[in-house]
Length: 69
Image 1 (spheres, rainbow, N blue to C red):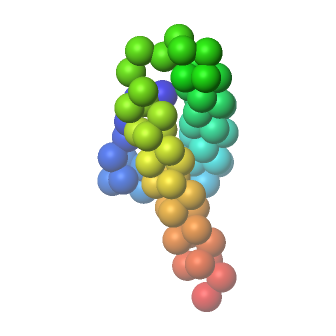
Image 2: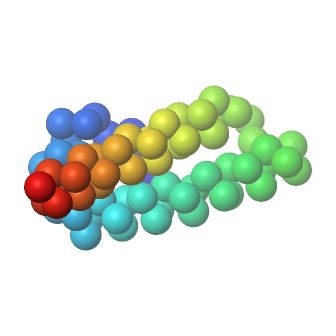
Image 3: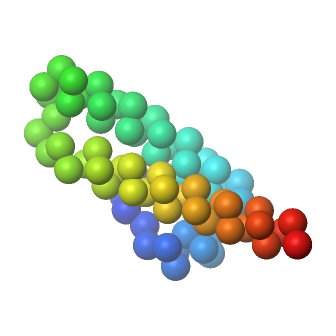
């Protein structure tokens, strides 16, 4: 999954963000598996994917908080 800036993510709707979040979780699983079996050449991908997951969760939480007021 290519890295997306927060501004680009803000333009997406909730369903798209949830789909991106699910894809990022799947990607993280695959990266961790590759790292465990020593098949991952670029270990920084794990960190980048975790940050992307945090970015997506933050946007979803912001929208939930704004909608709840």
